[in-house]
Image (cartoon, rainbow, N blue to C red):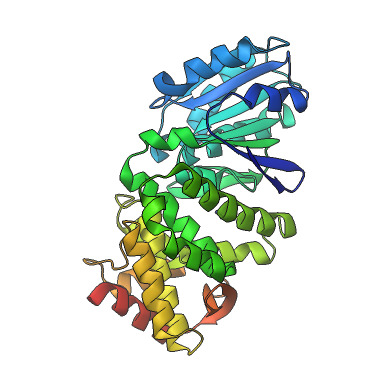
Length: 359
Ligand code: GLY
């Protein structure tokens, strides 16, 4: 077992679910009501066995399971209302636990319901996609979409535990594995050059799904994220660095009508931000190439053909992180060291967009 501290909780990395009941008991949840909120796509795979496992653990928790229809299109207040109804019917109270089992959408929605029902029920994240394991489940961002805007209504509400079962990755489709790798590469580029080099050296083992290589990848990646979150839980400073590639990426994601995966858009966005960092003379051409090679190796795009630079720029100006008309961007001061640029120029943004779109 690998254990990484984050604020006042742990991120546990395991193979299998065998120690989950023990972890919950250690947190005082033995015998309490537990509601597993699971993505309906995963239900047959993990929710049933996990429900049995927790119900038969010493102390015999009362375990119910709620099937949340997966997909970003269901991450909305109507589905939260239905979840509240289930919590009420099952008589969950403030001593009960909400256990989010699934990808980022499930964690965001279940976490939001947990944060608001009875002014807050404890919750635990059991992420089953690489993206959720390395990013979404860590750090307490919970939210739903509203009026077409992603994560517009939400809270910072920290889980009591993040429990990662590496075995769940065995059934993850390759494009979803790549999706998670985008955020992992991001963590290395913004804060840990050694980790970026390690990812390059170990790339073949990681891609082959070697359990120990993936465990080490997650240990280092979650460690970076946990460090940032522990220093800046509410994103008033350093946590903004996690938006590297995201301002470009979100614009492309919206313009694609969400047909492109988040990780794919972030990968293209990182290429744009790295290009801009190179143009400013902060990183060398070699660093830009390495960033792109790493992303490409993990099955991610670094170009976005078929988009108009002007439309992407206009979409970027709508970003939540835009202030007073200027575009805030996370750039690389050097490889493995990012900073927030308060006022990126229109011209340089256009050049970076032409770079990712034209080739
Ligand atoms: N995914 C970015 C953050 O947690 O702040």
